[in-house]
Length: 492
Image (cartoon, rainbow, N blue to C red; front, side):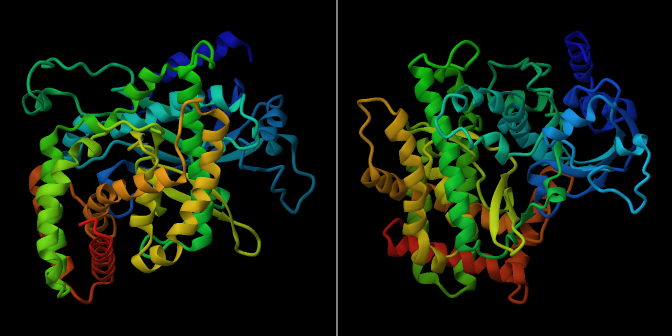
């Protein structure tokens, strides 16, 4: 396939802007472009199947899609060498060995189709936070940018691209510049109603069909899973930090982002106004106090009130990414067990991870991601027994990037890292006590704007009061454990 043909297909793909555009011809063009196979034809286009679980309305709408295609004869060998084709007739032969050459070129693609949420309230909030834009930027730009670093690192076997699904197509009206702010000088609450909602689509490889699984979010993540996730997270942080340093030193070459542009792209925490954070903190205070009341732990209530009314408000600059540190880097932003898929060997031992959902990527201290995993995917018993060893495991890998690629005048050691961990505990405590009652809940946000949000809050209050509800029990157990740990360690 010549270069001009590829470019022509790329140009036409810009018209594929949503689920409604997934016609058989458009899906064909997407796969032709991704595989550089101008002869590819669609044999069968399956139906979209909703796979959005509870609380996915807070992020993207998610569907699965199965596509059967016939490759061009000249393309199948080179394509299979790249491991882009998961299921081909040649890899899974039938009992009849006299299979025709035509059938050997028939392959299946299992895809995940993501789009912005349907709930009107969340669509309104996405005008501020633009999470779908973040994920499109991750797949269209950032995976290409990190290659500037990875091609010159010594340990070239590890690639961030190997930790994320293959992306076949990505579009966002915010990314393409189709959304203009006609009331830019007006306050956010004035221009927000006139701003276009976020629209777009992502076609990603369905990693479940490659043997990756999600750990049950209601259960504490096992230690071996934690250790593997910590190691891969350390590489993730270390590589982006190296990108920043080499870019500052002018060593990445033409086409690489400047440090200033990297910070601008990842400046996602500053998008919402402070009043949104304050509302979040106020709502979380009420929820935590309610849980303490239900569980007979009212001795902590005064500390909670003081923490959320004073300490949390005083730390808003850190919440919003306004405090710089020497090791600020790209953070995943939503790093917990529901966004990490695990793969197991024949004996059931975990051997690999796959990171998903890059809607909350941000620029900040790596402690944000580290503690996010601890406080969303473990409990107080796990942390008391394993937190120090997990932090050592993370630091062993992360510090190797500091030693090899850090500026000569950088002085940052294990003691300073532990100090930053203590600082960020209060920040991630607010996030965890905010999110756990939502992400572990059986209640899902429905379409209907602010009224739907109020209804959801009432349902969640009733759920927490139900002592027989398994989700309610786990939410209260985790939140009480967080409060007890924070009080014991004088964080609150």
